[in-house]
Amino acid sequence: MPPSGGLAASPGNADAGAATATPRSEQESGLSVVAASQQAGAGAVVAGFGLIAVGAVGGWLIWRSGASAAKIQPEDTTGVFLTLLVFAAAVERILEPFSRWLPGRAAEAALSRTVTDVNSRVDGPTEADREAVAVATAKVARAKANRTIVAWGLASGLATVASSAGGFYVLHAVAGADWNGVAVWVDAVVTGVMVGSGTKPLHDLITRAQNGTPSP
Image 1 (cartoon, rainbow, N blue to C red):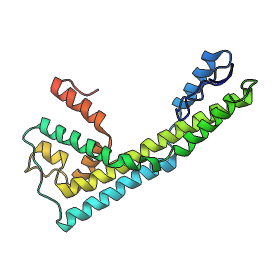
Image 2 (image 1 turned 60 degrees about the vertical axis):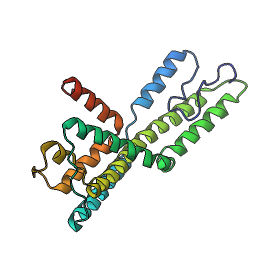
Image 3 (image 1 turned 45 degrees about the vertical axis):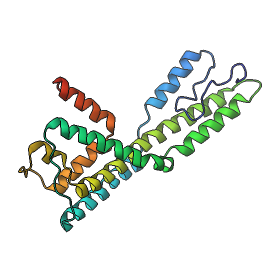
Image 4 (image 1 turned 90 degrees about the vertical axis):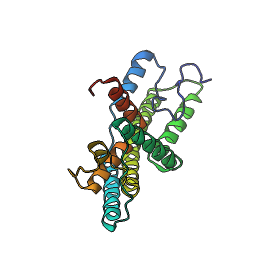
């Protein structure tokens, strides 16, 4: 239990730095706004798109070499989306063990240490303590935004290569085997980006398609 007037926080949580100082609601609201306003840095954005570009080159090389498998052609659109969903789930599981090396771990550890140090003070947190926790919380929020972008780029790049090697191209699968609107390797990039976006967006898309409701 933190001492009276301490900081009620769960180490490792992006919102863990919310201070209990008076008035508590104003402190928590302010920290929440700071955390929510954090966006990914330019470096993370460049890294994310760079990983997609690497995947695109890999997909193109596989297509150019003729090593691609025959095109997978599901029987209907629902089959296409279900294949995408399984594809995305597989990519998520493959990358899960590597998430520890993505950005954010150091910032979360620093926030945990800061909160622990502040809560150990018998005389309660000072204004400097609250500011330190707010800064650490904002850094965690920024690190999580960076991690999301880098993870998306990594998943998309990997899925692009897998799409080209495995012969599953979402646009060709939907339009039909004889459709040649875009090059196959370009379709692999489109497929990779869709898969890299994760299972939840795909699940929502399938649900809308099944219910006959348009996307927002």
